[in-house]
Image 1 (cartoon, rainbow, N blue to C red):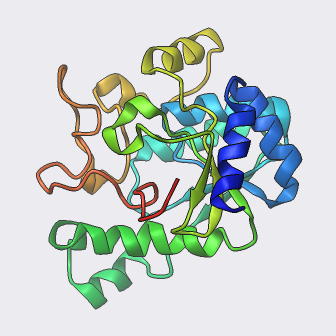
Image 2 (cartoon, rainbow, N blue to C red; image 1 turned 60 degrees about the vertical axis):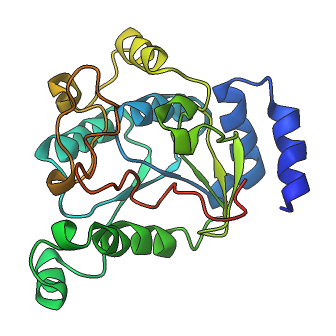
Image 3 (cartoon, rainbow, N blue to C red; image 1 turned 90 degrees about the vertical axis):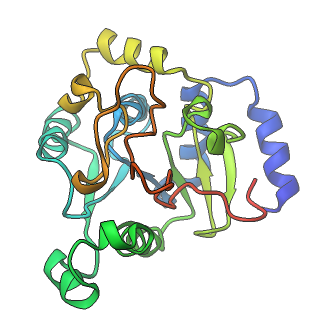
Length: 234
């Protein structure tokens, strides 16, 4: 789509709810649509909504090999609850041992951007190849870099359409939905982990701190790059 096409689509979808956005995405892209899922709190809501639209949806998880045990345990619970989802646990080209041999130990400390490139960005670029569009659970209130996210976004980094059905949801609404529908969720959320990534780059966040402050703490890094805007992104 051209930039003007994104404007037209977002104008058309402006007053629609999240289910409407998912219906539009499924009708528009069908088998060419994938949900790149982090299995965070927003993900649990989006997975449940998606199950009402497409029970055999393609789900992509970037398995960096460095996730918390609680994250892997949650994925198993999700498989039990939504057995028809097609979940792809995609791994990097390099194993942790191969990465250490090539780039040295603890690359996530020395060069976190390069570690994310190897274990996330390169994997997502590879796995998105068969698809035209991907779903994301981004919300506008999560961070300043996400404040202008639209329902339908031009993703120039991966040359795909990025659809974000939850942009207007608040954190309170996310957790109300999880509790109301008794959805499984990562137990680390109950231990002050609002945003959960790899074990080496995620810490607990104390009350009053920014919810993203637990990611890459002390590095100045706030995004792995999957959602960082590139010049010209809408």
